[in-house]
Image 1 (cartoon, helix red, strand yellow):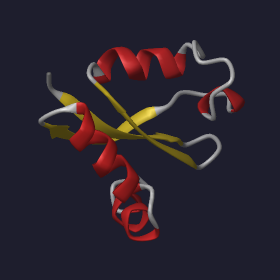
Image 2 (cartoon, helix red, strand yellow; image 1 turned 90 degrees about the vertical axis):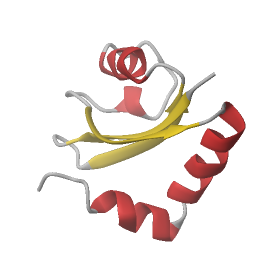
Image 3 (cartoon, helix red, strand yellow; image 1 turned 180 degrees about the vertical axis):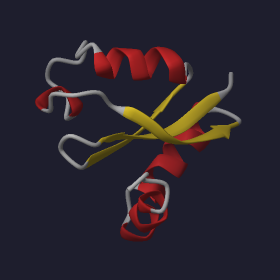
Length: 84
């Protein structure tokens, strides 16, 4: 099953979140509706915007890529996608 790594950005708080999912549209909707009440994104008001998405062949590959993007170099790469 296809999986995706994604990065979302909250311009109101200048925050970035990186995650993985098999349904990026539904996941973004869930973040914006604060369905994840204990998650990092639920702490911040305002809308989250999708700034990066990458298709992976399976969940294992997506989780590996997510870990890379959460590293220092990965975050520098993601910062290039923030619409300043």
